[in-house]
Image (cartoon, rainbow, N blue to C red; front, side, top):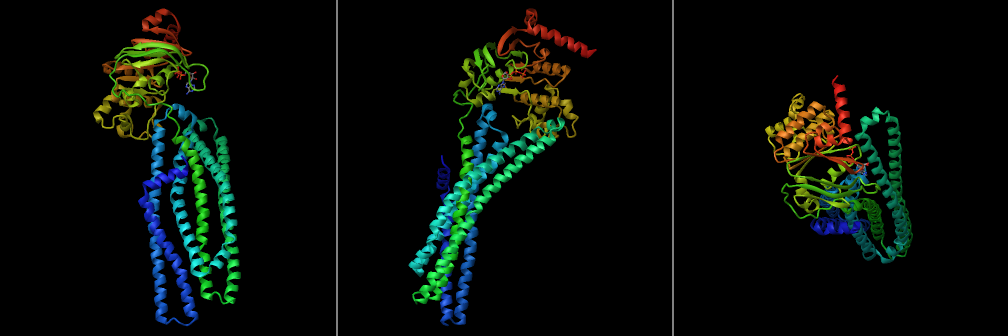
Length: 580
Ligand code: ATP
């Protein structure tokens, strides 16, 4: 869809606002062309000494009243128009947000956060201006132009009007030429602003690392370079926009010279009065606005087109996770994988290869293996962040892709490796997925996650704000708040993806004991590097390089004497050394 179609559709839906602005603008245009005509009469009346003092005052009062009406109409159309254009901005932002919310990790791997933020702010502002100011300035300018030219040719002298308009084709050509450069310059400027946004967002998100590694001077130099490049591009765009003005000035000066030369000759010949020439000159002055409006409209449209060219691919990007499933109700049953093979986009080596397992409802599955073994990848497949290339993943007899995303994800409580907390209070963070939970329920979940005592020690207890991303909490506290959040929703499947890595072994044991007590009917998958976390699991899968190399319960895995048994011995030895 082009920018013009987008604006056209929006105009159709909000035609009442645009039409009332148009009527007000038409009123202004009529009054504006009436004023010079009236002044012309006044001048001729004064020159011929036809006007009495009273009549002169009455004429002036009419002119003043016209000026006041024009003022109010101008305020009126702006209010109507901008209210409509802001609505387009809101609609586009809602569309963008809704689209981004549906996209999966694959999409966000390709797009950078700062760029997406720039689209939601800078680029949508530019489209909004094209639908608002540009449309009405275009309408107003065209209307004024038509009326003024009509008054010049029909109301004064057609020959003089034709002579005065001779330089205008030059202006049309220069506007066309400048617009092409304005478009390219704005596109570059928007791209560079997005790159600057990316840099700021990334540096602020990783400010602790940047400071700790002494990278501040380098990141400052990078910022200066990007800020300079963005400013240069913006200046270049403004420079091209400024080129409209001299073109207008040159055209109008040439038209003025032609008017005075030819008009003076007509007066000398007795074919035109001085009053008519005065009116004509005033009309010529009134062409300044339509000319400037044309330049302004073109630059706003070019900027809008450049912004829309960046925005549209994101709005139309196919969803990296489809939602074509039809089963809206999930009755917990066995979760089973059959010959699963999965590779990340662009990766030659599969992250999971020929993986089969079965997890009956209410049981606990352990997932262990060295780093990069594919443990989190299996969790991502269950959550449908990605789809397997081969094999199937079924839950309660149906493929996970046959469920609607809402049904599937509503049945899963997931605690990721890196717990994400929002800048709200501890209680609000725990009750994130169940905002109507009572304080007692929140506390019960916090007790299960062994974080209740920690929370009570915070300055305002459960009402303590945790700062952006939970910066005021330790890594272990963050993890346990995230576990409490997952436990509060009481979903049939709980996924703990290395969610106990930042807590000590005693706390881990307490959380797991609480989980066992509170587990009634809940299926749990525990991913962990520490084997003590899965020692009590009903079944454990050992992955290595995407392959299933061992499986069984704790005792069976120890008796096999493989990777699990070796790791267990090593970790036990480490724990006993730590205890000494
Ligand atoms: P860890 O214990 O370190 O978390 P893991 O067993 O959970 O590791 P996965 O995260 O499943 O391992 O990764 C399996 C393989 O897939 C690794 O080789 C990893 O480099 C690769 N991988 C993971 N995420 C992506 C991604 N988004 N894009 C491309 N490759 C990825």
